[in-house]
Length: 260
Length: 221
Image 1 (cartoon, chains in turn red, orange):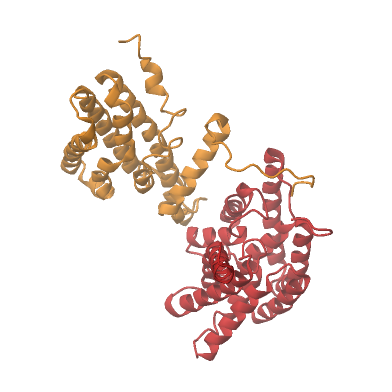
Image 2 (tube, each protein chain N blue to C red):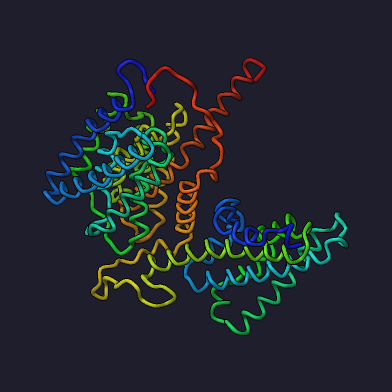
């Protein structure tokens, strides 16, 4: 993608800018350890980007900052360096770099890393998302949507579906902070969310439905675990939703104009 | 006959250069299912190699008498009989491992690797080269299973063949076991990484790209 000012790195920089409120509030409340783990993850990601730059001439991307923030905020606590290095490497390499770098990946590398850490080390506790951090997701989403780097319909669709669930009296209060932070960090990713207008709305709704399903039916799961699993499945469904939206558009077009 | 067949290359080609699992991506079902530990992987490899070698020999012996129209039925009957014999032997002498392998020994019957070699090679060649070829392919399959089985057991439990190799962290050591390695997805990841590694080392195995990127004057993103 390249149009005037807009190339891949512009999007990455603006995405990082949108995440800044979230990152600052999170570091403010979690303290120096959190900043340290963010730096460690960033270092691992930078090393892998360097490896792929040298081996395959893949241009490095600032999106690593967004990936690192998502992993640092949502990864299980007290993992120790070795599992963290393993999980981040797996997510970055298998989730993003083998596909040709940011912009060509099918799933968000942070979702892959988090799912790997969650399934691979089930003994560790998932973090708790504090309420002020969850509130900071709202300015992050607003900045992202205004700058055009986050798909608005995805976030609005998820918010509306979630509001609908709350109106129906479903008990979502416990997962709401984690679900909103994950919505902004993982589901609202411009690369791996759906790309068509209808697909984007559906993508947000699918995420909200999955969160609701897991929150009501998955006993013993932590809120972050529920949200991350829902985000991973929603991003896997995104191409299908796009395909469905395009098929629908073609069917409408055929009905109106009489030929394919 | 020895002049027509280069037995050494028939035997060694399927090990890496023409490996049935990593190059032809055959026989994956069992390769992924039984590699949670090294002993089951080794037993499965041995069972498959024996079945494949003997069935290749049998098919090759009667190759001029099999009508083309029913050849698949004949081949599957031969393979299935051998599989039943092997399955009974395993149940009699290696009951524990037989239980761990569950249905996968019986499923050797439908393993496309066995049928592939009898169909492609044994049906057209004399018994000795056919058996050497089948044995080589069995060894190639075994090699992949052994590598993946060893990696999964080592990183999943810190053990090899049941002996503790890494000191576990809950016993005061440094190694945190990775339970993911014992689940099915890890076999896919490991096999994918193995295929990637082999194709990086031997680029002639890599498939031709399906799409060429469109020529543009813009810098590549």
